[in-house]
Amino acid sequence: MKTFKNKFKILLLLLLVGFAFTCCSSDDGITILRPTVSYSETTLEPVFFTEGSAPVPSVDWNGNTGSFSLSMNIDGLSIDRSTGAISWTTTLPPGTHDFDVIATNNAGQTTVRIQLNNPVEGFLTGTYDYSSGPSTSSSYFALDFHENGTLDFLSNNQDNPDEGSGTWVRTGDEIKVDYTYDIAGDHYSLSGTLVQGLSRLEYSGTWYYGHGTVPESEVARFKVAKELP
Image (cartoon, rainbow, N blue to C red):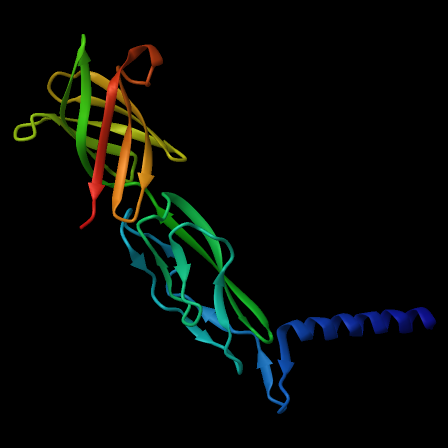
């Protein structure tokens, strides 16, 4: 009988603890519950290197207004503590970001899982350098990145450029490109670093003869960028 009473007391204690995490009572006797939060979209698709925001969620604080926060710090990502509106700047890193929105009041917390997909895309212009003996010359160069891992490019004469296409792969801040000219069929490759600022996106590095960025085939340097007004 003693064992049964002890088990009953433990069970009752667990129930009371669980209840305490879900609701509580204010001094005037009004029951307070954890907030209820709903976003119309939990998978967000921003445009790369562009400021943006998600719709404000529907929230019921259930008797006691609290605040919103994010489960992790991501460069360029923020949340309005009062409304729960998620926003981002041009410095939001490329890639897929999974995080929780946390709504907190006196009764506890409610979390909503958000996924934010931010693939590299955009048209960047600049130059590539070519060394011939003691001299170095620069020519027009432009890359148009597509989020599916392909790209188009323009080079040499800006008014009547040579055209081609290729593919790209990103690892962290590094992007490697294999590309081919449409007419001549010549193959080249790039290896460079992507740098994001509030008003400038830059991709720069080394270009090579042939696909695969083979070190022995290094030719010279390139730099392309996108500037915001």
